[in-house]
Length: 299
Image 1: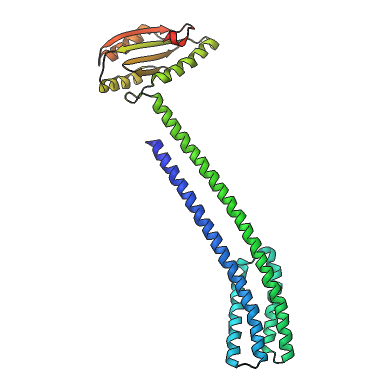
Image 2 (image 1 turned 45 degrees about the vertical axis):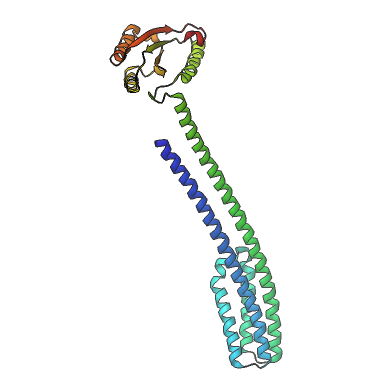
């Protein structure tokens, strides 16, 4: 149950990572593109607006019409002033400030000039300042977008790697659970005989290297119901030494004893025999000490 909760939490964490990454990417791209397009458009509107204003003024158009265009340009300039600091990249900021200042300065002169030649001259100067400014800022914004895309790719790679690590952890948890389930009897929760062979091979190597002895108690039971087997297994787990291990398969119980010479074997066997016979009948019980033979012969 504990591992199941861990897996659920990890899967939920993966979901949150993917969702957070998706929203972050969408927000970053949209926010960047909208702001980039907005300021470029505003600069373009100022550039075109000044040219239209100059033509209307030179053509002695209606004052109301000229005033409307003037207000339109003033609003656009005001908008750019209020947002350029959070949009223009640092590397383009000095160029922008200098040129936008010159453009604004020309515009202020143009508003008060009445001389036709001067109007034409200021109009041309404004175009010469505004056109390169729009082109430069457009390129700067494109470079900014490329940097953001690189950052997004980096974040996405980190997200993918994090997800893969979490998937590996989940796989590891599931694998361990499956291994434990395959190594344990589903009824008694005792290790099965597959695990017994692994343990005996380990103990055999230990015996060959360090001459560490071990023994085996094999108990054959008569046909026994599941409840009785469960009760016996619970008591055996608490009654044997911590160093010993209990295995079960098909009405056969095997107990591995490490360094049996350190205990009174007869008392140990009698205690286990008494524990089991209080629940069911024993068909056969025997104790064997390992002496270097093959595992198949030993069992």
